[in-house]
Amino acid sequence: MNQDRADAPKPESAEGHRRQSAHGGLHGGRGPKREHNRRWLFLLVDVLLLAAIVAAVIFVVSLLTPASVFDETEVEERSITYQIELEGVEIQHFNVQQGDAVIDSATGNVIGHVMNFEGRDYEVYTDRVTEVVTSAADGEKITYMVDKITYPTDKYKTYTVTVAVDADYIAGIGYSVGDCRIAVGRAYQVRFPGYTDSAVCVAIHAE
Amino acid sequence: MNEEKKTLPRVRIHLLDVVLILLAILCIVGVWQRSNLKKLFSAQESMDAYTVTFEIAQLSPTVVDDYLSAGVELYMDHDGDRVSLGTLSRQASTGAATKYLKNNAGETVSAIYYPEDLRSVRGVLSSHGLERDGSFYISGDVLLSVNETVVAYTEHADFEIRITGIEKVT
Image 1 (cartoon, rainbow over the protein chains, first blue to last red):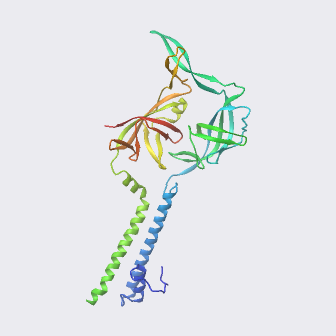
Image 2 (image 1 turned 180 degrees about the vertical axis):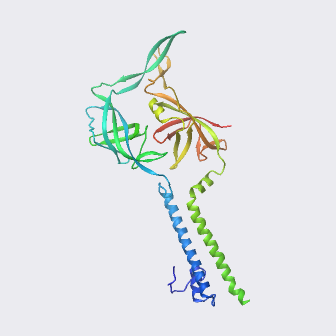
Image 3 (image 1 turned 90 degrees about the horizontal axis):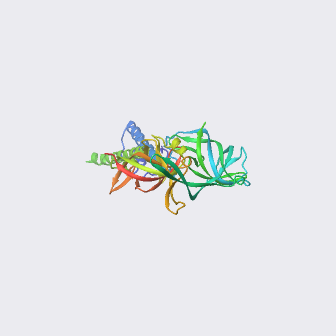
């Protein structure tokens, strides 16, 4: 490894001993075969030390990065569609078109393109109750239902937007697009070219 | 005498070489097997089987049917690591999601949400953990207590669950 060094070696180091041996300084009078073997031994020590240093560097780097170089997780790309729900949208401001890019504001990633969307009445629960009386063999039974109100249907709607994307899939972990995990129940602040709102993922379908 | 002086340093060199080689090999093997070493150091005590029960206050019934079936494993994040909360031993059960409100007579009554919209959910997880100083550590790492709310996730869904019971399997 360092056979061409000409300067004086440090006696304690493996290299030093090797140099001294090669010149016959310390253990003079050894045969060439023995010298050759010793040279290989020192070379082995050097290689192992270097390997240990490289291993230590890899270890530190793997600790500092979220994805480990030793991870055997297999990432595969899958085409998926998922649905996000935008509640209480003012119809006059809603400006989403088929094919629009969908951006997750938190990560800045394009997390798909709009396949289609459909609206339905925007309903919210109130703090009032409705009494539902039913007859039973042992008399009447009253059930209290939490009241729902429907916002004016010409002004407000809840939109379900279907988004298509090629996502990374890891078994046991699920789908992600860039740094953005796609999962049911997860809330997103989504941006379309002409509209932004908060949304919740309500379904995922793998194709 | 002269011969001894000559050989002594050689013996030292060999020992040093052997130590260096062993250290280097240990270092490489240590990096290669670091995840096992981590487990060895983090959970030296053996873990036992536990049953962890949880509830979700309000959830769409379709989500329960699609994503909380028997055999599904729930995880949580802790310090950047994924920690297993256990596996659903059976399909999560649902009940009426309720809210206390006043009726027309001014009495406080338990009112239910429309069941097609929202249901309350109860689940049972087969988990592993250990007890230390009377506290339960799920997967040997994370302290978990009854009434604790945890953001749990499966492969395809995220949930906010409230721990309602932790029992050692006998």
